[in-house]
Length: 545
Image 1 (cartoon, rainbow, N blue to C red):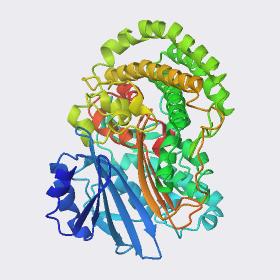
Image 2 (image 1 turned 135 degrees about the vertical axis):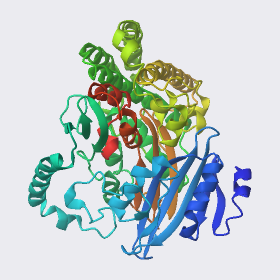
Image 3 (image 1 turned 180 degrees about the vertical axis):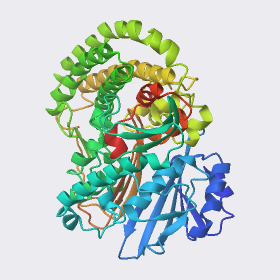
Image 4 (image 1 turned 30 degrees about the vertical axis):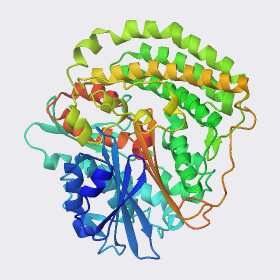
């Protein structure tokens, strides 16, 4: 990292400092130099933009932009900051999308929510929000939510009329035998997302994803809560794996508070997090086969998943919205009877996984069709900012649990689970490999906790939590976790004696994974949409936030 810091010194307006291991933090005093700096970062191997996170400072008259760059091969990260005027007419900066394809939707989101205009962006339209929010920039500090919500009924009617008008105008832009089909938002294989598919017969000409059907403005909702209450919004990123998203948020809070959690809490975060990952992977594998019309796989997987939900319920009292992780550790003392529920889940998994693999992983549809479509190359996966199983299916050895260990992952024995082909079948294969790996990690965590309790090293009634102040100092932190679907990055900003987050950016993987649909399916057949979409492991919760 020191070498990278030295090579960036020629940029006189860029001040670079160490942030934490594998991280540098740079402040760019002249935003006019942005393109030159990010071009230099890309030349150094930081080819992926994780996200763009604006912070609105009305008292300063500034909009601060935070860019997070990653080198997925050598595991280096760069946090770049710069400010632009807050006034709408002057709130603009150069787009980096021509250099970083993964920036396209993240810049659109910053424009939509904060009013930042990106010069040279190829398609700077609003994203996620419904039309009644367009041009109002709802994440600016001075946006009047109460005034907006008073007109909810009229807004809904206007949205409906706008959709009807769009459908009537479709024919005007078509040529020859072309047509536009709406895949979703109620398609059984899609969930609440609409793909506007332009096609000629069965051939796909383009796909324009229309997202935001379950937008809940989570990044705003957390600012209405205290630091513990914000957990309720954070875990709604996606309930399929809510444990790991809560862990990521709590890590950022703990960094600003200067708090170190106990070994028991670290191992509990691993144990609960891997149970949550297993729950998500079971659902993801089932949905993947559902898109092919093979519903039995879903039912078998749901049967196994229930046992791991029993574990979460035994600990937290809830199966889905567990609120089990909070700043300072894990929420509840540990009742060792939890291990009995865990034994049942592990026994069920061992008794079932062979049948699932034998019957489904080797079926003809998987072996023939899924291996021929949806191919993402190694370089494309990096440039588009993909992560998790989708990234590793293209041969990229990147897993935050190994690259930047958190909780107790620095003591866990594990390895990268990768495939080389990058096809839909490879993405399913990684899911299957990781499912078995997570079970082994659960066994390690269980054994370590049991040994720690037996030796007196860990007190299950007291060591679950350390005190975190209710008010935090001025601070800023970035945390990353390996969520079931990929990287979740949290950018947390606090003010002096803060009782709640001033700003929380939640970067989640489904945004980037959905962004590549047009590139993957252009020129393919309509019948390929469900299979390719299902293999991208998208959750509408984290897609829309």
